[in-house]
Image (cartoon, rainbow, N blue to C red):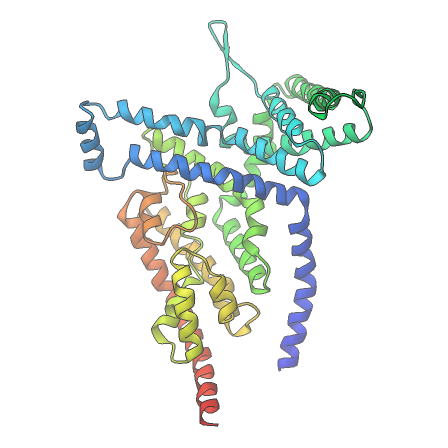
Length: 433
């Protein structure tokens, strides 16, 4: 039987391992991941001010309003929105900067010029609005909803720049000219060709489709991906595949997030915009849902170990793994029990997160819990219960997390009992010898 398991494991590793390695090693996938990671701190920074501005307890808002000597809360709330307008509200611009930098680094080309050229190209395809003859940039066009467009521009502007520069199409300065002076001159032709290319793209889109690049990309690429990533079935498949990769020791989260982060960030931003406007959030599935409700699964193993473990090994793992898991860091448990490549745990390991996803989804869709507002875009390391309250603005969000914790613990309990019993018996046998 062991030979069969080993043979099956080896076969699966041979299939999954190269695939995951290829995905992780792809410069475009890793660049998207880098860009989203660079963007995430600003979501947290903005959220601090948004939470204060729209605190879920009205008494707190009333108290701040009274302390400031005004009768209208919107007066000071609008001031706190300055931070949001400089961070989350320009998410697309931040991503195009970080995206082009990451690819330029990987392609070993002029990073600064590639970033500037990408920003100019991004703004070039973004149409301006006109009121009374005055032209202005609508900030919503460079927000998170432009994320798909910014990723594409970050990739293609850098690739074209690199190609042109490598062909030697540049103004060559005498050797005596310092690099700091020669560099900008040498970048002029590659940048010119990139900008001319995107000008042609904009003119072609306006002529052929009578629209703009942002709307075209979101309709052709954004909407289908958003429907897939924002659907229950789509997210369940994602969570199962993510855990499947983890089971074989591959970092499933880093592989998945490069694809899913832009989608879920767009959905999160839609909820945030609705919340700031005083309307109800529109998306059940978002970044907050994925990070703080759909990710509750393996933690059930830790709680089950703390409840029923008798063996010294499991007790020790529970003590060591419990503290990091307060902040949703699971590696000590994954490799300490171990859960990775442990077929005794394959069912709860792969499916417990998916089960939490389904239960949480129906709790939100039934109106039992308010939808994540998008105002508190907190890190995935935020402890359970605290995160549930903050992202929903309701104690019911924390209660839902408690229900998910209890449910996943019950799923893991029989598997932990069986494995712990076996380890305990082996320890007793060894101690008697």
